[in-house]
Length: 267
Image (tube, rainbow, N blue to C red; front, side):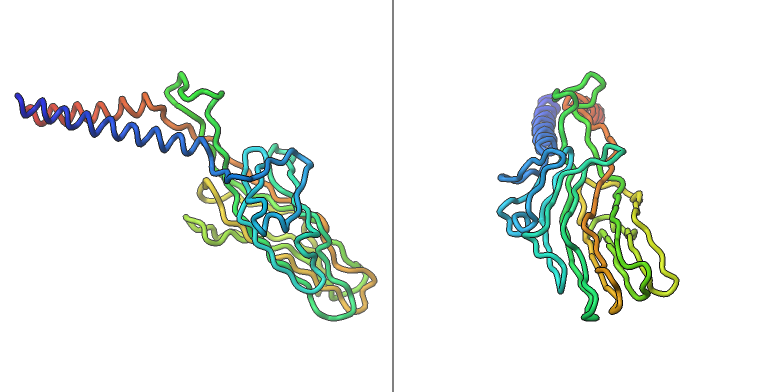
């Protein structure tokens, strides 16, 4: 009997430690991943891209999303980061995101394309349900995960001169699970030509955060009367709701496991 009681005490100790760990993890999730010094942007407000790439501003929070870890490089006629605005936006489906506004372009005449590479990470900012740590339905908070990505940009060029092309290509490399899908908007007078101003993808999995890469490319034909240019690139992300169990629910589940263990040892 004494051995059984000691076993019960040990199990209860493990149970309490496990519950404390679960509470710490839940608290960490609800606190989000917002770095110290990150700036919250109201819709329509902006910061310069160079402040984000340099780390002077370590990230921006737009609604329920955090954007950080910005890296930018450019060639030829593409804008320097101090000439690019990063603006908080929300789309018609209430998805939060950011707009890159600048003179992303290539001038005709030199037969050298202009290109810019832009990457960042996007994170979900978690908040407890209704501001409460415990909900009546047994779930302590509502967790959201990213499910979709949306890309929009109008590419302008001299439609009457063949040989011009502009595009924004987007990939999601370095994520787990891997994301094979890509996004692509463009305008072209190469060959048969064509244009596409919007693209989107529903991922096969959901993510708490994502790596995102963009390649912005422009080439103006030698005889073109206008540069290839895209001055606005919009990026938004959708998310889905996933309830999380409350501390009480976790305790009941762990308690049930402990009772089953006691019963087996008693037999």
